[in-house]
Image (cartoon, rainbow, N blue to C red; front, side, top):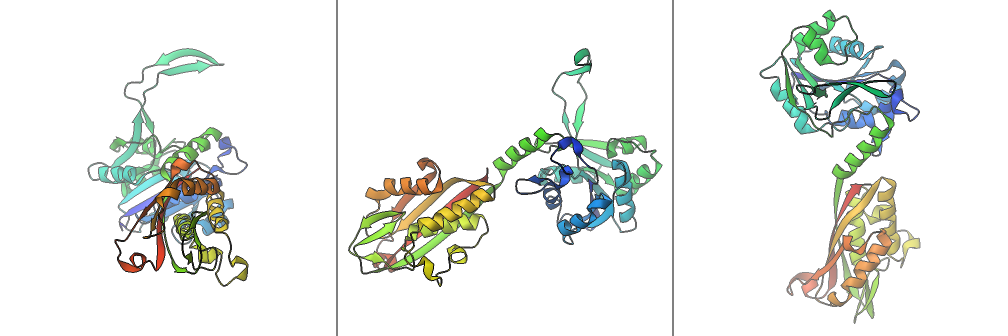
Length: 376
């Protein structure tokens, strides 16, 4: 964290154009509030001041959990920024980033570019060059055209040296579209840094759909699972839901499907939801001899409920015997059925431990699994 850096997040508007029945910054996006995502992007970079509507103070306190200072926003964006700047005055801040609360997909790289540009400029802001033709229009008809050369689409965070932007805001009459406009009115030097298409501002209902798609491409969860079961008396083992003839069975509270247990734990791990034991305690007699399909289906359902889908899973079974190869395709198909995905997303393979260790001595079977979840 930089002691001389502060971040102002402006989130006091009502955002009615976005629809949804409540201010857009409080709507859910990818399973969490928009403002929660925005705040998380800046936590640890510097002290944070969050400007919210007075009516939202209660829910804002629950959201920040000590990670930011709250200030009551004003009737306009620049009024909210002035209130936040005043709150930071005298705190030793040398640089400040001012960011829209409705831009939850800002990247660390973009933030870093803005901060770095302040080494040589009084202000810096991200932007994208306009590439589309520009028209003027009225009453649904094109009335003229404008050249696009030298035009940019402005984004946030917009960064400034603190004393300069504080003075600029206090001198400005109000009504500015953003803080760069305020800075330019005060004669400040503002550098343009490269913006990002993904750094969208949620304004219209369709913006939420676009943001969900972006999150789905970038919100990746990985989990690992590992399980071991010892051999016992029996005439078959159950692996990945498939019964395989063998001269021994596997010992366990449930059906001892070591492979399915490892995969189940991998999915729970990707969700940060513990392991099978948390959800199906072995001390509970109702799970005695239970089919492990119950556990795997529960993990898959939990992933779907949290907005994720299985991208792929890779499972390795470690044993000398029985031979897994002849049954791998059936195992792959059974796991795919339970998980509700195509078989091509599931890998089932086996290896030996070259006669080393407990698996090499044929005392039991081990299994390792990796699961990748992406936002649906």
